Length: 101
Image 1 (tube, rainbow, N blue to C red):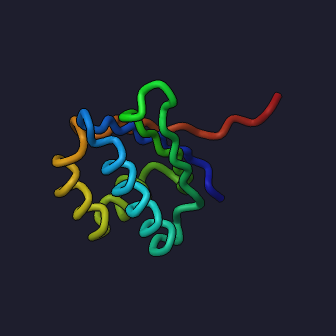
Image 2: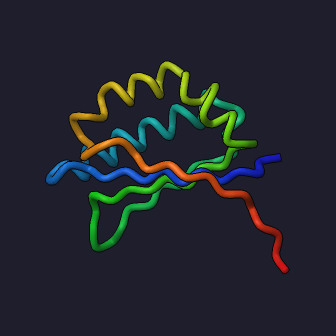
């Protein structure tokens, strides 16, 4: 069961929003094709601030995201190359899915 939602917030460097979005889309496609523990990823781009890109990811738990996922070669390669496109490291936060009242 996919009980954790991970929000990953990126900010692209000025003038690099499209390049950052393309790189993030490519990364998401790779994650979804290679990592069976991931139950889905949505990409959001802020309407009034296109350099703000947020991923909504579904994982079994934070440990799977922080451990095996973050050690994947495609994640490590993205981390190494992201400095050319992003204003800094992403803001990552973890949530549980709350049952409806």
